[in-house]
Image (cartoon, rainbow, N blue to C red):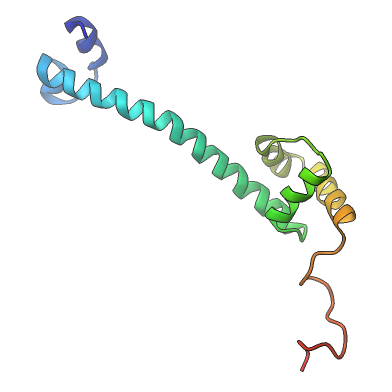
Length: 123
């Protein structure tokens, strides 16, 4: 890299990293590596956040996240996780309609209904 370009990128660094070319070059290279890595990590973090929001919304309506997503895929509902998380946060009635649609098509979720009398689990 050119000296001027390195020092321009190093503007705002602390100590000699902002004006000593050898140190500045190392710090700028490392900073560019971090920015490259973290652009990918940002996508991963956002997807994780969307999944947490969808899980909270679907669990609130009595359907686990995995069954909700599976049901949407089987019903060919093509809404991505980003939009589902926005619906869960900002449009709870629309999100509930999606959850109810999945429940309707998949049937009752095991383990959440009433336990029949005389079953093995009610001794």
